[in-house]
Length: 401
Image (cartoon, rainbow, N blue to C red):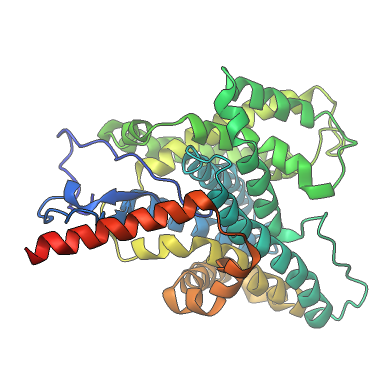
């Protein structure tokens, strides 16, 4: 997987099966023995490495998320920038959610996985859902900003959604036609204006089809988009998307790209909701496939940052919001092409730094707390740990002989 990419036209080895990650956004790992030049593994010591393709995809997607958020205060002054903004918003979160669903395929209600769901999703949600309003109180001098765990604030909606999606995974694995059912639920959500803001259920339900799609996908599906003709075709597809985005700026509300409101709330007839769900789903899949087609499969300088995308996602919001509260985006020179390029570079650089190992070490207490004190020891987990220790002991004895 970490070898150089194969020349165009040659057969490639399909992506290896993914293993269950801890938090739904980390990458799968592949046995070292499957790579060229790797030494055989010792018995009882299954050394594994992350899959570069998925780490690369997650890093690039989170960079686009940060760039999109940095464009929000500027896009009103530039039709071209708003067109690029709509194109990015068409596929960056769907791509991230599809990957999250793909890594959730083996999730069940096993105690150790439920613990990781709590420590990797629930706890960060509670902490950041509290931290963001407090941050606004201090930086924006807004003493009336409330803290509500039921109304996700800014970026925390994804954690809330991920928890709900992950908990319903066994149901989607049981249903015969999960994707049509998920699309039907998303379509119904767009005509249900009474859903309200609790747990940001509109987003949870409207983005649900992408998570379910990830659940039913297989590694070879990601391999299919790596064909040479797909990479070539993706260039005019993205160019056409930018043209359509430019055309749609004065004709279409950007609210459709956020997936957080019903058709009635967007001032449209109720029947446009289901139609837009299908239209947006098709457009998002097309652009996501083009995005995946250009994601490198080999190890890059930014591959290791793919393990820290949740850090970059949750932390970059403080930088963006600080800029909004303090009026940094009001500078007139930022509302011109060079200023917009500058903001783009700063956003990409900032989120990159927030994905690095030093930042992960500092904020691991909030993102990946151990919390062994909070859980009972599961008998099955204890048996697995004992079995692992016994295997390691037998392996050392064999090496000693």
